[in-house]
Length: 576
Image (cartoon, rainbow, N blue to C red; front, side):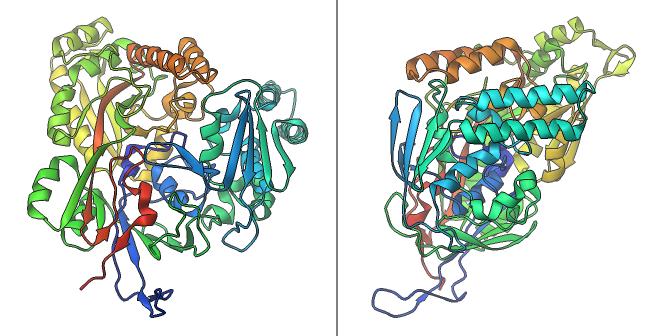
């Protein structure tokens, strides 16, 4: 689930954009010779709708895809993940812990209000606020005063839980601690166009964290600090980005139009697209059908369809690339069945994941064994792998007390082994993976009941204690720090449920040094530790396959940022 530099989102939402040209949708600014030109309109077709359009609250890639057009960060990253100036025209780093950003002058929000360093500071203060409703609080504990703020919040919660304070008194304590942090903490504005961050110690992910979040308007959002999630700007956002929101009809479409004053792309040029329509369809099959019929310009193509699609739809170019993404089978680690490591290891041994890659991905991917992507620098190829071994799976289940019954199912304490597997219905790949798992576990004596849910319902379910198992994925950030996912105090703890002192220790060690070689060693150990504990059953790291109609020009693929990394350079031929 993933913003630049952070974890963004589940893989189902990673259906990289479909684009549809409306040749007669209106007129755009005149061409260089003064004649009107046709309005360039693209429609992005996807089965994943956004949920909230505030950068500090987004946790899924469908939302982040939209906010990346509407908001800007302090830096923008090129195809090799190198930072370049965006809202910050320059920066300096002193002693690996003091970051000074010079904010670009003359930038305005979409409502015309000027951007200043106060908006930048405000954006990060929303995450520090006691009423913050997102998952990113743990990303900034290295900032001077932030860890003490977290301790104050935890102490207030403990006193409320013990009955020593009322809820109102506890919140008052938190607000006092927050006010002290605002006054004395490491987020500073020396002048209107300088933003300074002082960390308590060197913290490797901090630069990516600071530069990756879209900057939000203080003048609009400050009155809603206590409930940003339900503010009007959560669905009607105002940023400084290349596109501004025109309308959002839930589960139907999001319409964005070009911001004519935007100039801080990697090329220094304005975007060439006048309007982007994000068209929401019921499932991936509908998006692919639209692409094949020429009704949309770009859509993800299921990998197993890629070769046939290439042969039968020659007017569409197919691009495939390895991303920072993987798919996994997740467990409720507090559940009496799935809290048993032997059961989790048995399920992993029972799945022929090489066959999954061949059958479900058409070979466009590879088996995953831990939390990493082969496209990123921290990848450890030597993580011990659990091989496909149904006999070992059966032995482990028997060790765990799950014995074969007369009806072919396994039983423990008189109860059959029934595995309830949740999957979001919009994802064809996940539905296929669920059926594969169902077929693989049945001979082992495990009945799998697949629970298909709409995306919003699925997210609510996997955050709750009601979940048993589920199919999900992570699109990983540029920096390998996985605190929000696997640390016991991480923002996604409600989903992952990992609470292991050794995992915590390795995560904290990896983020507290800036030496890349040392970090690579630590993260290699972390990947091995996660695999040993089988926190997940890692399934596969799939390549993304995207179809682009030949009307779209300027696409440059091959970046781990995805196909859209240079979208500002794209043009679209008129429909004839």
